[in-house]
Length: 410
Image 1 (cartoon, rainbow, N blue to C red):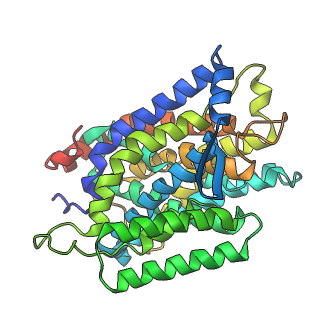
Image 2: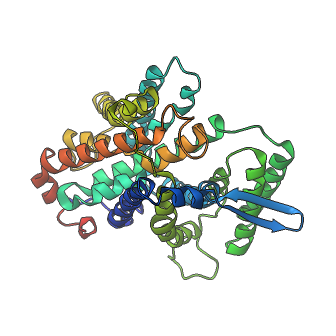
Image 3: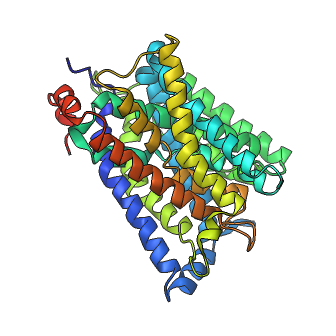
């Protein structure tokens, strides 16, 4: 029996191409950063761009516009996905949320613990403890989508649910641990804009212009407050009404779903590839195997590759054996282990947290580059996950369980 498709499952078949595009952006960045174009690459990201209104101005290098501005739109999309899943998706069912919730928590705690243990004697390096705790939802789902009917659709929903919860945890971590000195005045202004968003929501207003104007104002206030500006995207998403646009036919998508549909292509095919290109350019000149065995890159690589699989699979096993949850329909333990491996693809989110932990541009100096550990750990996790799910997870049974759902084909 094929399970009914949740709102989330409608988007899953489309995830293969964004994952491949992210991989291509990473490869191009690595090639450019290790070629005669390396100087051009660094100069491009360092070019300052300015927006000014009268005497008020925001001037930042292009790299920071990407990481602070473009990624705010990405986190807005994450916030919309969270709201939809909580209101009407997989996360609205308390029975179904237990397994991905515990798996996600295990996938955060164990990698962070591995990193912290390896870097316990270096206070500066300890700033990066959250880097291996992240999962790149676009990349992981893209890899899983390439397997097509070899995995049941419920497994894809399980991975997406873990990644969404992981993103929520990342948002909390960024807000709590990666916030600089606070400006009280800017924070009060941000709270004022949030209160207006709340009023719009309670009034049932579904016109987009007021939300857009307040979103821009809120982003500027949060940027100036010392809290990372990307969190403004999540805050705005929380106040988008989960109701159809006024005047739309009965049964139409809600405003949350409409915005998600419209923004998702821009994020998947524009913002994330641009972010990957701007942040994945690791200069490999002079790097040896010893470079990977520096405590920070090693802690990240082991956290992503070993910590994620131990945390996600271990927490899932405990939850099922304790009777707190059950396996996704049509899935077996080898499927779950394969998903646990894919959760080790930190890439975009790990790069983002790394840029906050060790300042923009990677590394804390000449001693290491955390991006090396992110790339190695994510690459090993992707390869191992594909091998397990393709050759050792009972592909025939998965195909039979999933054959009647055309949405799983690519």
